[in-house]
Length: 326
Length: 273
Ligand SMILES: Cc1cc2nc3c(=O)[nH]c(=O)nc-3n(C[C@H](O)[C@H](O)[C@H](O)COP(=O)(O)OP(=O)(O)OC[C@H]3O[C@@H](n4cnc5c(N)ncnc54)[C@H](O)[C@@H]3O)c2cc1C
Ligand code: SF4
Ligand code: SF4
Ligand code: SF4
Ligand code: FES
Image (cartoon, rainbow over all chains, first blue to last red; front, side, top):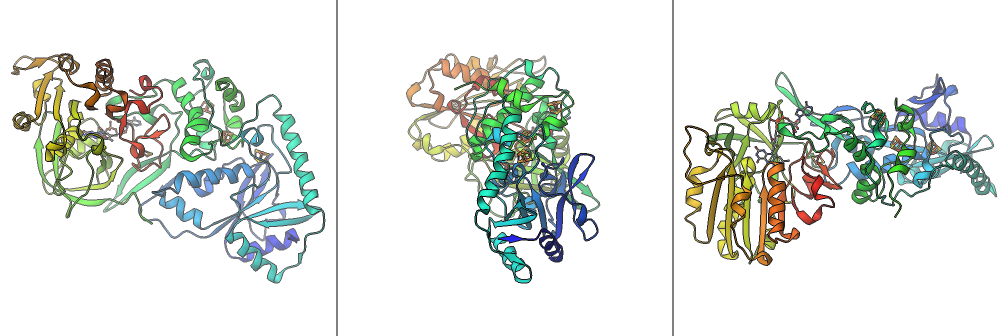
């Protein structure tokens, strides 16, 4: 289905839901609330925003006992690396005992994915076995062709939105060959990514990697935990009881496995007391443990950890150093 | 949807002082509390915090239940200070528990140290409930000093049960304390033991270092790694496989454990803190 971008955006705004969309500031994208006033400045199809999508779906600090009724939201313009991260979080947090806050937000979220037309130096979704365009998890996907949006639904929610939207708006039937045009655009971006990542090896997100623990690899890490916090799939959390007057609450807040206190048990015992043990653990978690636990790896190749790292540690290089060729 | 973080409120009906650092808390759950021996619960004080603990009573005892807690830090210190009538919150039970069906027809060797006796007392009392199902039970318990040995009075009763053998040891006997039994770490109790290794299962719980050396010594005696049950301790928050804190290798201790067999781990040498 083809539509005019302005019409889709106006329609989304008219739903009364909170719509987040990417805006550019000093060379980076950020999700911000879309309004009638700023809609001219939004930019769709850029590389992934600086902040991970978990910031919207898995806030850094929330109370878990009395989950407030949350508003419905639409996130417009989600890159595939973040869509796949949401898919990963769904597997991790909506199992037998769902995280109640995540479940509430997730139920009320509509994800609109988009083909990447830009890539960043740290982008490496293809190395993890993902494509730079919406593959799954999206409710609706957008491919831009000749100033028009080609819309595809990926879920019932998306189908419903398309149905409602098509009622009062100009919808064009797909023109012949449109798929080939989309394919060609996608190939161009893929080629750029391949060139950018030609020094590294290709893997798949369902393949379990054997890793050789290394001591040297961590020499420069300063244990800031940035790589954990900025990662769209890192979801480790702490749970603390807090009390205010007669009310008490359980507070869930992000934690980071690179930090020393993370695994410490009572009495001071620590199974990962040395930095290199924590460092290796992070990679084992991403590429081995989560594949066993949920069937997919916990890296979608968004590259944020590369850019945030004050020690310039590049996950692509580390993963190669650690991987034992099977 | 069930909110796994919601707790039930229980009432503390009795506190038993077991040692200078360990107390047993008897909790009235208001109704039957179903759990399987070896499973754990999250025990806490509203607004203070919570932590994982295994009920120390038989799983046939459904109310009140007993939980034995060692004072090691912030929250356990607060728990040690509460008095009868206080409110204690509880969620669970979580985890797998001991696979008792695999123990049937076998000799069960129970080896514990320190507060590790808590889950093992639950296991022992549960086994004794149907003792005819097992070939026999051998219990080896260790403590740092005679004063630190818990459940002292009950242990005397256990030794009288037919089919049960009990061996106790303390690391050392400080001046002023009396002890007539074995002195030495708990592994010294294992050395002279003889058993049919093919038909013996062992359950071990205690401080990491004790678990490590006990495991090695049992394996040396010929116990099969798949018959060696370890109750693992790791840092826990959620208790239900969400927070990731408890992972050892690719396992969630809270969900896949806390009871594991030795052969489940790829690199068992590295699992002890
Ligand atoms: C499955 C299981 C069963 C258990 N069963 C029993 C039992 O039956 N009886 C018993 O006595 N114990 C048991 N334990 C151990 C018990 O859970 C801990 O001793 C208890 O939670 C310690 O609580 P605390 O607040 O007093 O300890 P604290 O030492 O104050 O610490 C609380 C938690 O925070 C961590 N921590 C401490 N300081 C820091 C810091 N500076 N930064 C970051 N983190 C920190 C600790 O590792 C601990 O996990 C069990 C543990 C497990 C996993
Ligand atoms: S990592 Fe891939 S999907 Fe993500 S922004 Fe870069 S090119 Fe797009
Ligand atoms: S590990 Fe790094 S590249 Fe992979 S998903 Fe996390 S932040 Fe992105
Ligand atoms: S961002 Fe870099 S320096 Fe900071 S913890 Fe991660 S690897 Fe270490
Ligand atoms: S305690 Fe949270 S995952 Fe096990």
